[in-house]
Length: 203
Image 1 (cartoon, rainbow, N blue to C red):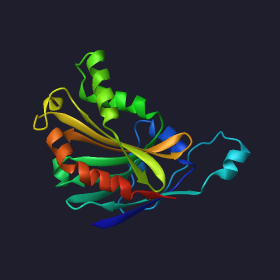
Image 2: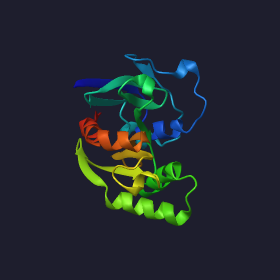
Image 3: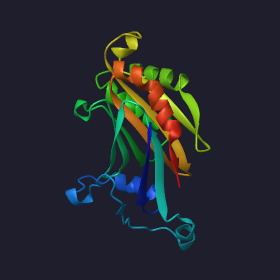
Image 4: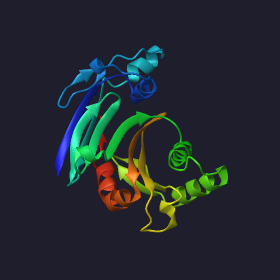
């Protein structure tokens, strides 16, 4: 197991969350592996808020066995590949906003694009009821596992799934860790995913 440390010089994470919604980052904005980049985000906060902002946002984490570290990219603070990078099985870490309920509803919608509202609501309720709370650097993080209608049929059923974690880091911002892919991979890698989330540290 290796450890990765990423430095980002920026305003508070919530400002990064706002910037994450801007589409079309150019090639020059991409963050290369082992690179330290500086991001400038327009601020409209009061002097008091400015004075309370940390100058640096930094995350550290352990890379589970069988995963590889792809480094930061754009607004992703980290991207990790499960197995071979060419397989496209990615775990991402991004700063974002929104409630756990709202994000789980959105993620379930990504899985069950054809399902009716009642079925999606039932799936969200099941996922939240089975959610796990873990300690991450003193914050109570919530880990959820979501399945599409096919994968929810049973523990061996094929389909798509999302592993996700929400880690509060400030009053209005959080780190979101997410994997979306085959349900079989999600089931197999869930313990490694939880260990990865638990290893995250930031300043």
